Image (cartoon, rainbow, N blue to C red; front, side, top):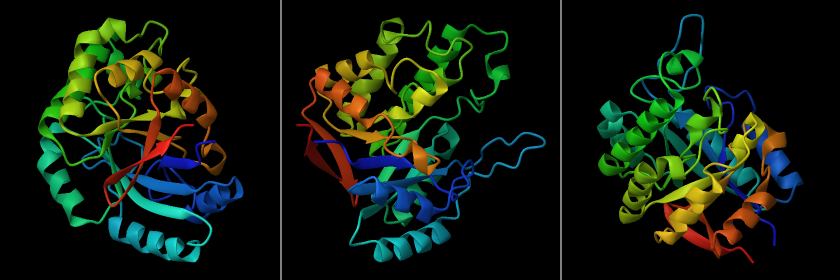
Length: 272
């Protein structure tokens, strides 16, 4: 049976997306999806550069209003879930906890889009530093977040940074960063949280999904069971992209189930 639930998607409520919510819903219905979870970006204190207009503050009340309208409109055709993708920064963790507890989200992704205030998206983040040094700094920041922040359900695209590295994932592997990765995975598992298998990295030219096969396998070996699947789609045509590949990867790592969330509670769906 195919995986028909996408738990990482964006619409025009996210600062880097122009797609109306209804367009995503219509596409999801057209391709036979059973569940669609919106996870709009909320990255407060995002460092906007001169000449740019990105806004990741998220108009949450308006987002909620539109979601409830479409949830009712399409309730007989698809199950819509209301989520958010938090951009974690160490100085914001208390504010983010208050924010999450103020709204009735179905699902919360914790993500590291920034590292120590810098954005790996821009090449100057890597200037005068080795790729390995920057990657280690990024993974270390994730570990610190997992130790100090717990108001989330899964940690998103753990190796997001390799999308933008000078060599992307050509010189990258789990083994190279085994110690810090094991610390991250153990911390997530001990906190009762999960990770996601994010298929969005493929369009950036990466060989693997986020995270790589070896990281997923290690997560399973350490006792990890909670794992969602998301396309990170910002356009309708990217919904559910590479999900058949994701299913094969999960099964080869030993997973028997994937996870969906409703009212912040995990439900386990067979991969058979």
